[in-house]
Structure formats: structure tokens, C-alpha cells
Image (tube, rainbow, N blue to C red; front, side, top):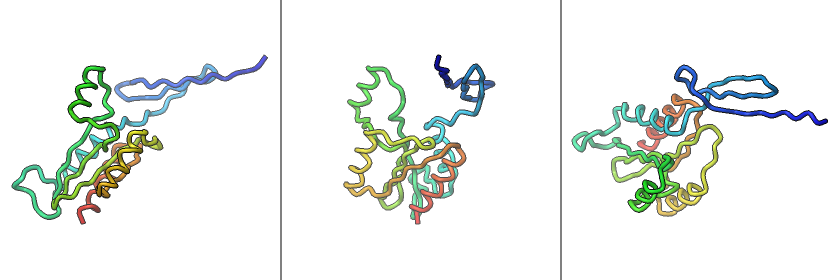
Length: 161
């Protein structure tokens, strides 16, 4: 008789904290779950909007300033909502954050949790945008909200120079 080991993983909320439960040979272990991609993006948006270079209104715009917009292309939608979003211009593979910089420059940020790979639509879309001249593109890989925010702030400040 062969001894087979069955391992199961499940992400649950324990006291409001996302946790991964792993069961192997009847033993259960826990560890904190990685953040969701939208959580990384939200942390970046909070950090970027807190910068003095962030322009919230047209009156505050000047050299070295920027504003931003985010997308939620990966959001789960029902068939009708998905069809409506695509008809209205939602494009698979689009970056998560757009950074609009003074002087008509555009920066594009894609977020990935840990070692997650780009999706096929992203593998096609990002080079297309580069071929059109949008060369300020970056993939930020992070496993904490703090690291994602720090990387975004460093990136955007570098683009503003």
C-alpha cells in the first residue's frame, strides 16, 4: 500500500485577518495570507495622494506635479456587467494605475502580488503601449501594502525628475 500525503489549502478570515490554513497528514498550520492586488493598489493610491507633488485640482498644477487614476479590470463581474464594461471601453491587460504628469507625460503601473505572472492580456497590451511611445511602464511586485506604497512613491518621484 502506498502512503499518499494529501495537502489542502484554504484562505479564511480569523478575527478579521485573512489567513491560509494548510492541512497535511491531519495537521493544520496557519500563516498570514498575502494581500490582494487591489489592497496593494489602494495603499499606493493613499501614499501617492499624500505627496506634496500630487495635484488634486487644476489650480494646483505646475512643473513636477502629477495626478492619478486607477482601474479595476480584474474585478469580478457578472456576464451582463462584463459585457457592459467591455462595450464601454474596458480593455483587458490595462495597467492598474495611470500617473498623469505635468507636461503631458504618462506613467503606467502594474501590480503583482509576490511572484505572480503577467496575464496573457497584459503580455500583449503592455508592449503595444510601449510601441505607441508610452515608455514609462513598471511592474511593482510586493507582498505587503507598505512595500507596494514605498515602491510606487519611489517610482513616481523618479519619473517626475
